[in-house]
Amino acid sequence: MNQTQHTPAPPLSPAIAWRQALQTKLMDALDAAWAIIERSVDPAEIREALDRAKAIGAIAVMGRKVALLEPTPRTTPAKAVKATADLSLEPLNAALAPVAAPMAAQAEHTRRALEKLKGGRRGRP
Image (tube, rainbow, N blue to C red):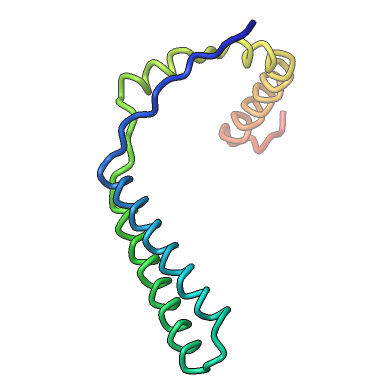
């Protein structure tokens, strides 16, 4: 039987708790405005509920901007260095070996042609 270990969730930061509380309040207010729109036949009451829904949307936008002010967790340089140290270039070098030999020969040919041009002989033997 295969059982997975359940790790407890980390405690909520104050910013996350605030975002969740704000979202709950806004959803409840929007549900109340929607209920008014659904059950009412009075145009003034519907207009007031629509204005309230627009205000809720504006508050939600501002709440999102405030929530984005919390800095994101960064990895420490030691973790980043360890991650790059784990990478190996051996498979890449092995894969590029068949391509590297012809390119080296072409580079040598190009170098010789350039040397002939620099010598003032304009490529003539």
